Length: 280
Ligand code: NDP
Image (cartoon, rainbow, N blue to C red):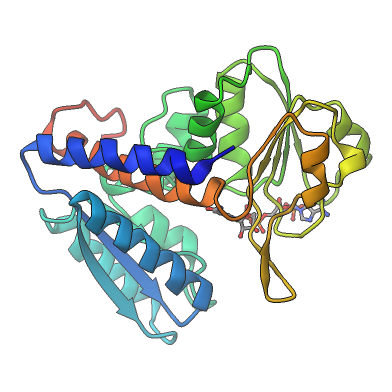
């Protein structure tokens, strides 16, 4: 499944939407500390913003930044009308309570969809600003007409960022969803029953060829470094049995960024009143 190609099409659509919006759209990105992977992700997000006409306001804070300092910046960004979306790149250094920071972001600017208000609305079946990775996965499944109604879906991973929200989105599309995690017993057997399998673990080769039902759709969210090379959570040999599969790189990653752009435009619409925001 070509996430890269699909993301290009989404970016082109977003570019037209931004131009048609008639008001500036601005994404504030906040990078705390010197995590290299985080720096790369934020750079890619800013580049994507520039491509579609979203202004980016970037803030880089040192690894020793206090929670109060970061909360102060978030308060400023909440109040800044030029900033229609706020993204605080995770993970944050250990002295900062991530939950407190996420809760401080104005829900209507929460383009990551991590604020309890937006996560709660998703839980209640009223998706607003939904986390970008699960949104991107749903867009890939829709683009490839993957049947979800009544399908058995297995999500491996239960993080707030990927595992839980993708499970809820699949459930909303009437899949029968199982969530597996590090304490799950009999993962192989569960995986073999899945028509749709989403791996969001962070460990290469978590899903091997013998675990996948022939013809199943496999979504590989993982980003791992193996011998200096990028690898997903799914063994490349799974391609031989899967009906459809996302590559790493070029699958979920580009669609995550494209979905972030979509959320940023949606947030701007909420703020202009063009869309009603149920989280207000
Ligand atoms: P987390 O570390 O927050 O969650 C990982 C999950 O995997 C946990 O629920 C954990 O279980 C579970 N797990 C760990 N080991 C096993 C195992 N052996 N068997 C079954 N389950 C296991 O990671 P994230 O959800 O944030 O990210 C997952 C992966 O996706 C990472 O590689 C990350 O880099 C990547 N990612 C990629 C994105 C993209 O754009 N492509 C975006 C976001 C993430 P437990 O809860 O019990 O600990």
